[in-house]
Image (cartoon, rainbow, N blue to C red; front, side, top):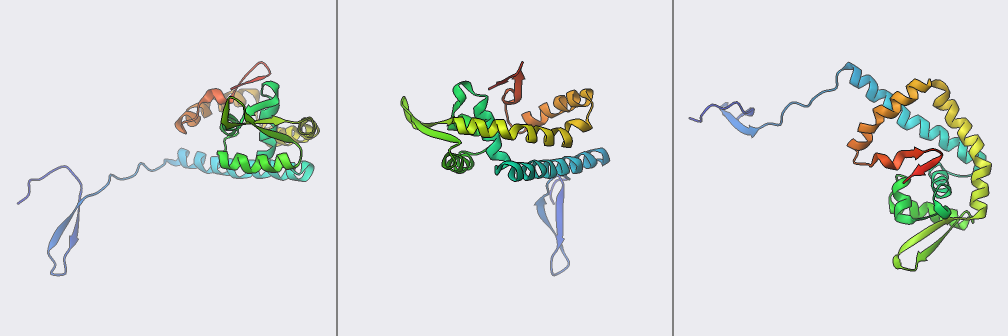
Length: 190
């Protein structure tokens, strides 16, 4: 007879009615409590509806996707309005594949240019063109108005600060560097 243990073991009845052990079972999941479930559902709504609303506004007013706009915005905030594609992918929360697809469309529209980096032929530099800068200048007011209407007009400054602080451990839990999302003065830190 087997020694008794504290380990959970599942049992099944055999066709003859005998009981057979099937091995250790995983521990019970840590289910969400009520507050956590409500927060999770709210995060799901925010994660779905905010990007969709912003995307719809940008497509209607500028013919850009939310990601296209973000690429242009991050280039505009980079020294010389240029950035390595690998770095640009990181700050836009996209894969190199996603960025390459968006960059091809933006380049075709004359909004960015791409060129090989002389010191490293495997690297590519993306640069915001004058037309891309103008597109961003023309598009930004409507975009900011939409973001304000959806998010910031509904929060107090204390709530904005609290939400910023609450998201830091979530961002870190995703393995993302928080400094990617920092601004000093009016300048993006990256």
